Length: 532
Picture (cartoon, rainbow, N blue to C red):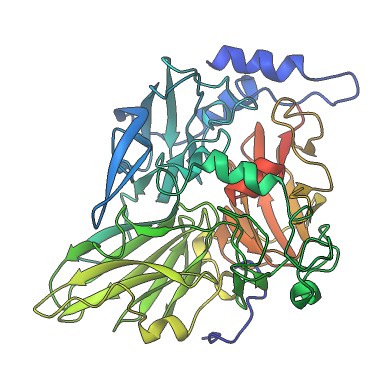
């Protein structure tokens, strides 16, 4: 087994009618004709999906909520049906999901639902204004699609930075021919939490958008940073090192910007945002969620990072984890002590439970904080909220070292088209972008990355910045290299290149973006669009 220890560096990869009008009217004479998100090519692809004929109906109400996070901590936020995470949706591969979204958010807030990781029909992807009109306050919209690929997924809005509120929930698509043998399942949802505690995500984004350029660090230089930290900064314009200033620099007023988040695994700067809490299944470490089981039982953990700015190093004290899937797709099994999971990623692992009480810890990578849940199979005293099991510093298998299972590995083929996806921007001006162009959601097809149905597509992610980015592709999964895992979200390390491949078999217009909610909203997003 190729593995790394804690000192190692991760090398790689860690409506509908209105939609047509939106897509058509924004095309200019200089823009090639693109597949309409609700057009005939999309409908034809949907007919090819193997369906069971069964329909799973549900209603999801997005509304203000006062949540109990445990430990006498209450947070005023937005959530689905008054809880975070929202109620798990579970169906069998091939079932049709019919989910009515009811927008009861305050004011004139619009919203949507993106079904993260699902290869679904384009007009159900939930990206205003690219694939649908936004769902207005007081209105409803029904998402209807066949979920034909088994796996661990989740859903969340795709409007502004609403992801960093409580609007998310697991979506589990079961395999009717499940090859794994296990006794029970536990869905584990990780999240970094700010909303209703120290501020709102919109306030966080407003502060981040000011960038670092105008900050007075108290050294009288007017340069914006103390000289002690300048060696880590360069000019901070996107092609030099990210800032790593003191946690409490003199003269700087910062409610939300995190200073000094550093991770060797992530190649340097670990994150932008100060979060007062890190949650597992909606609970703070002082009052954790508890899984109760029996010794010697084999449990499947479906781990989802629903956070907005934090990668987590996850371990179960006293146990090893066997990685079986990432982002819904099986991999050749690998036994590890811990795993690193970025925003938007999902990992399935198997664990055989010992006898006692054990901490499941999600350490916020580079942020000196963590989330906690407990596994109880017998008598014993619960560990403290600050427990750090030794497994966190043990062997970590990264995505670049995993291999796709034989039955999901892409057939060997030469790429028909290669696109360089250059990740640009920096903290100085908070000008995150792709190929130097911040994405404009009011004109989603203005500068598309063009592909054609039937092509083998190669994307070369070239990270020109000094921060890591989890790059998420809608409507498809790509393969890391020639034999790596199939994923829809992968870590691209600073100053590194990652090549991925996918087959263009799901026509439409699909977002490709950084799943750091604040980087994506700032402009690190683009449209992978099929020619019509």
